[in-house]
Length: 156
Image 1: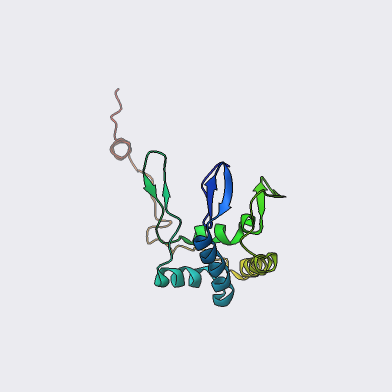
Image 2: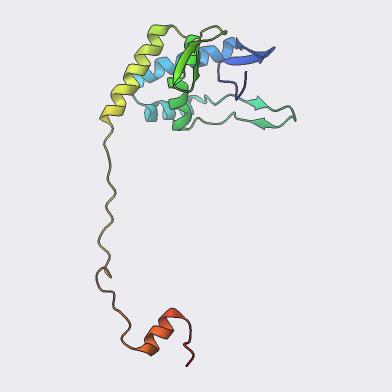
């Protein structure tokens, strides 16, 4: 087992084992997402409830995690097939050696909602307002202005 251990699991003898308390949180996150309908609202709800990311301690004793979820972390959590007992390698999913936390039906409903939401996102285009100096650039009219503009002196 390489990489960071996902919320809901611990590592024992290089295998993922279910962390029961975290597994309950994972299941609730999936259910809350279906109820709220968007990752943005889910993120706000988790912050309000005080639900935070998995706290990890490195072999050197350094702590990480235990903070509010970012939206990206929530998308990753919601799309992770590890919670149905599968692993992802490159673009393929394979049966894992660990126990599933979620029922496949719940996971599939969340995947469908994520796909539906992705289609509804508006494509914002950023259009900068016109600049007051746009189109008014002038070229230096004399050699002296050109030398000043370029910040060097031509030697004769």
